[in-house]
Image 1 (cartoon, one colour):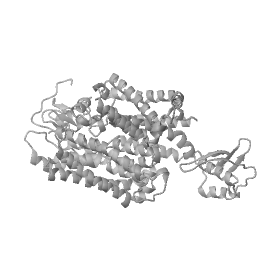
Image 2 (image 1 turned 180 degrees about the vertical axis):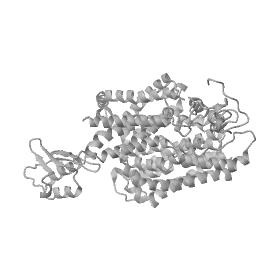
Image 3 (image 1 turned 180 degrees about the horizontal axis):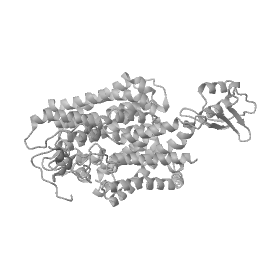
Image 4 (image 1 turned 45 degrees about the horizontal axis):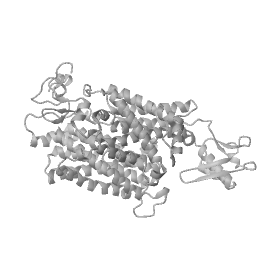
Length: 73
Length: 542
């Protein structure tokens, strides 16, 4: 991953359409999270859920299934 | 709202920072009123006690405008922040209104003489009522927008910083760190080894479960989950197992510690007795989430003062929570180096988190907690140079252990020569005064030739001469504590209302038993470290 890619999110999970990063959507995907935690706290930070791999990932991660997020999202 | 658009400060994007802003607004208001010669006290109240409906109505009538002010004040900041964080404002406001009215009802229920006899405070009552309602009927989706357990507890913790002297953090903090580190590492290893060696679970799953039990509950599981690329199912099960055990432990620890602490501040005479400070430290090592632990110690505080809350905060927040970034960083390296080589399926996410994760996962609300403590400690250390304490010659002396109505006559009283300049009797106003803070030695000198009634009046003057205790605490810190209680009860009610045991209990037995083995080691280890190894620190803590 190049430094330029890392910054813009191009090619990384940060810019991927399969990443669930919206806090409300993140909370809906993990029932029970609101009991003692939140999708809006620093402990979650910028982590998101990958819809393809069903894994929790950080934005700088990469994979072969990357698809750029539509502009304006 | 996308939280990941920036690696920089999310000053308006996360609950952690909003908890700091709200906490600081409350502290600034309380200090501002005080410096302007007033106090926030009339506006920062919780419902009183009552035994018949007439008393209830009178209390409600007396404090109604204050309750409206608290509702609007908290509600305004919560609403603005929720809107900025991208939540539906209408849903939040509706939910928050119901939640606030529910909390008000809980406070009044806890203040009813019948419930008081049951030794049930507002914190546990909020949890129980919430659990009953939440498990009979699931909260509608729109209401969930207002169920922000973490936001409310973080706000309460920032406010708590204003009531916890910096000196206490400096004295007991290192001990809390040592004890918490021992417990965290042992608990993590036990859960991880049980998960991977006994139940053959994926190492990353073991790490998620272990961190949930050892560091900071569900938030810990999530913080580490991304670093080790845990499966969504692992996180979901981790949330469920940790939540179930955290709620079960609220009741176990609350009942146990209530029984173990001698009633009415009595002496420790039985083998099973522990002090309020020890109870708080034990809960701090053996609860799995901040909100759950605060439910226990806030309940204890209704009878035993703030020592359990202080000890818990030192142990849990300072001893365990703030190290979550380091756990995430280290486990990320372990995951890439060992675990992913064993389980990699080929096209999964690649990459390792950088050292910046230590800061990124740091629970930022803790900065607000420390800032509040520093601010209040600095103010407390700067009493007015010309402060003169004043006590009535006829009045009531009140302390934690004593209460006495006295009626003294100082017309013939002769203070020691060394104190003549500082002590004065004003017969016209019926008061005695003392310039500067009276030391214990000076009190002893003054009371040496005093009669019984004069002694009580002088003891009162001793308290009143301490500016930080008689002025700052009474007029600034007490109102902050009252508002902290509101944040806590909102939080505990949220825990109950958002917990659906039927929906949580969908995890397999393997992760449950792995975590349970950790609990079985963690609880006695926390007890031994608190009440045997580091007992002198926790017993002395106030």
